[in-house]
Image (cartoon, rainbow over all chains, first blue to last red; front, side, top):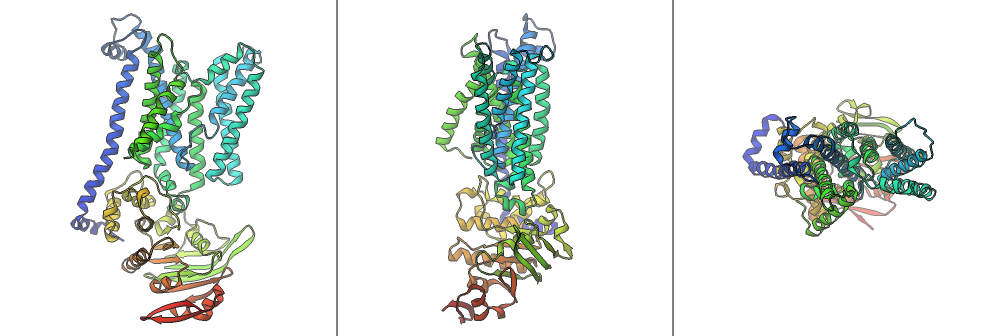
Length: 361
Length: 249
């Protein structure tokens, strides 16, 4: 076909324009990611600054750098309250949004999100079971209550994922089978959760309901460490597979022709997405919408090329979560709304606006 | 170049392909002819190892591709399926995807050069920055062929490359294919329903009947008897302006 020697000739044939145009086009995508990242830093500083007690930016930087601050409680406010919240928002936003982007690609369905596979339903069932068991003294004093909820939610998320993967393995892993099995599994778990709720008493029921509102206030430094580790591994795996996802977007046949192990990439993509979602949901509760909508928002700006879509989705997810949580803390201060409500309130109109405007470049 | 021996494929215990054998030389276009459901697409998929044959060997330049890892197969063979899904990618990126088997961590200048060269050769530079989900069937088919070409394959496999195309695009895509095959000295295997189009652009033919090679050779095997036998339709083979034509009678 061609070799290094003939490459120089190409430029003589007017392909310089093509190169320049292509670089410009790539540049536009990179600038979207850069601008949203900068915006993320701005909102990060805002989220540390605003709240019941306002902290000036200078004080925040001092405190973060470990210097003494003039304001009493600044250290506690930042390090124990606001910073864990903000970091949890960023990590959860990245992991939910990236999982959604990858699931939309490997399941070849625009409705793909951690919800589609029933992961959140499984986590809610696990949490409900644990809340009931703990309040009825099943665990005795062996487990800390909060830990038992997290562990149970995480365990059930994984059980549901592996059930789904087992079905896929048995029945051949076509996207249709996977989505339908995920929806069926989700319904089953929702029914099981409702069954448990029916037998819950007046103190248990609010706890169960409240758990399903995702809340970043639950994030401890330890849980953030675990979430960050899982998210980092999953993100690296997704980025490593970006060309495989691009190939699969062109259809299974083309992907196979390009040497992609389509079934393996699809199942591992689902497993990794489930793992990342399970970690976020188990620690923070159910946060809907981010996984579905953030990849689509990113898609509208950078297109379907996974080389740009994955980083853009991650940043948009983090941005929406952090902005939603900051809003949740100030809208009806001193009360703090659960972030899950705000993500839907902010994400849905924004998404509808982009759909109607048709901004796709 | 390509040597297929004793290729067998079963689907749910039904024999789809029975002992398929044929050879190809570089610079040749070979068309597989046969009625619907006879296993033409299955044969292409087996050659490309998308399906695993029950037995047989598929030698490309002396190597049995059935023993090679998928990525190595993709460096030797390009596959253009009948249907492509479109996504929000520019034509340039959609074609660049064909470099995937060769790409390690990032794209090198060499990859971009090959994409540019193929686009210029195929007169696609006008389309480069357009999105493929806004393109016509003919344009998408050309992009698919270009994607397979940037794989730098020794063998090209094309499943019904002219279905859904108008007359002008049918001629244009096959002319492009013929030029590339001759210039780069590669081989192309096609499936086609349009016998007359196949006669115009192919060097050799395989006629398939009941999962077996009924006849294998050049234009001389396109006789009324052979065509009548495999399609079950009486035909005449005539010459129109020096071009062999099959006409149902």
